Length: 219
Length: 353
Image (cartoon, each protein chain N blue to C red):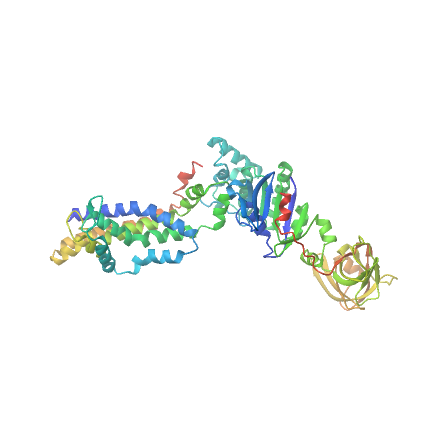
């Protein structure tokens, strides 16, 4: 089994999660109070959902060109596929969180305000705990989606072992080279991981609505 | 005024809740001034725009929402702790203060319950405790009893009465229920289309509405038109002249609207020199009360009279029967027919805060 590819995919998924979740929470929250231009921003953020991965990958490849960040080249590098992964996952991260914030009744926010809480305190003590389910869903979707991402990663990163060859690309490579048992094994691992992630989302986290209650004990 | 319970009543969309939200800082007015206990919370004029606008958090007002708006992820105690979050007191002191408030509301033993585990009345008590926990300078109640069943409402009325005694802060109640306003309020302001039409104690408001729109809004059934000249009111279409005292403000031969409260009417079988002949149009009994619709034979005016079931039986009231209606002219209240264009916007009467 291609352990390197598996570990690389996990690394990519965890990095993507770590970077996209705070950003997703911020954007989803900011969109709440926005009236002008909101639908344009929402459309732009949802674009990766409908755009063919190869098209997105092509633009990123052209866009990155010979550029680098902190001396690390973007094309055919882990940083490159991480940026690509972040862009591809924007709708998966933002939309569930946005729906969760929208589900909070405006009177709840107003009650927090008239109770003397600042905007930041209202966000931290009231909105964030109430949006927890949406944040969990976003995390699971992003994680599972990153593990399985193929087109964009292949376009931007190629298939450099240990650097850009993720598990999906490894499966493709194995099928190409008629290593069906290896491809089957990796597919099984991917299936299992996705299944666990989605079960956690629907099961454990779904019921644990008051995860933030621990946080609230400090109130 | 401190300790006063002031009710805002008016039809849906009249601006009652907007007024309340503006005081709390949840909505902003274009012009006006909100001052509470010597500090200006909001000030704006047409030239300079908004010059002062404190945030809701800075305004120190307790707000009770119609649907309670409890934080669903927090227990009753934690909900009441939230307004104390920025207090300098230690966490244990904040918790014991919150518990005290729950005890005062009579739900101390429910402090660990989550909002969904509480009944509507209990949730409203938690919300009231939360609204008061920060020792606000004004308590704003937005139709707080509308979603609660009648027995619970009665018990909440008592709690509110007790709070009024204990806390010397103004309480502003928005309600569409006139009986509730009559029962609880020291003064009532009638609002229509964002304009305060009249502010008066309930008795004055119900007996002496400022104009016909107020009479309509406070649900006065018996409103008629006539002409007033020097203490004499003639009822349109009738020969009957009533001697009515006014403040001398109404010029001679002025068309007026006039109202008569229920206790100014009586029905008799026998004729008297001052009685008016009426025929019973319709009798509808609701429990021990009957609402009788009468029509004057002269002028065909419809008069609504409420009587007890015993009274209906004594007079053998039934449709098409003829009776003699006595109108106590000392209880007649006359008002100009035209609408008084009161320039006071709803914010103006919030000076009471």
